[in-house]
Length: 300
Image 1 (cartoon, helix red, strand yellow):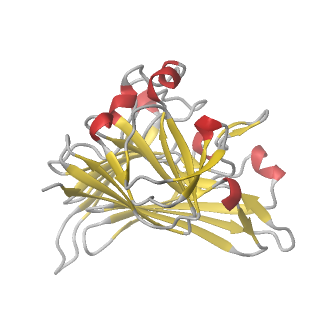
Image 2 (tube, one colour):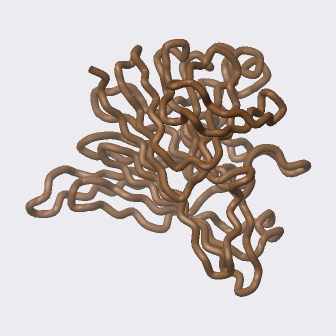
């Protein structure tokens, strides 16, 4: 496929390069290279499968068993969940956006060396069950990874109700040593305990068994501390009231055909969105924006 390189403007630093290529399974993808980082984004699902700063391990976990075909979502990276979260009887898991081939609307280099790519969700038969809408997705690659999911209700009279989530899988050195901070005192729905409502009492969350929690009414940043990889991952967001924390652990991992039995040891999901009680009810003509910034910092 083609390759486009964006040179820096006079007086600015850095070089932004975007290459269109065939990824795994010959699925089309974009490789974005900046002076700080590299990223790989598949058109299938507008799926950010890779992001890494120079001289750092990858930020995102990607399963070695992931299917790279048009019928299945990619396992790992950042799936775009829309217009529903979780299971929907007769309609599959986590909506249809993550298995559609998105269109590239714009590739925009900035003077500071960052590169933004805007995707558009194409029309599909599944969308006919909803009032007319458009979905754009803006991915900006620099020393951090910034994501913005933009949903507009195009109807003149009907409310659009949907759930959305940026389902980020993070690469960690060893899940047993990882701690997650920022959620103390927050109520959550514990899906492992049949959606029981609980309150997070711990200063930091440690994972030693299956965890599947939807933290509600939370817009605060969350941090993943990883002493093995000697870094801190910071998740900042806006336009989101739900934070999902997930690790399948051993039994669930063995039941997943696109996930290796031991991969739960080096991943954790901390997801930003609006799910369950925070499903978005979007008035005619209105727009909702879900923004997430993912950054890393070395642990001292």
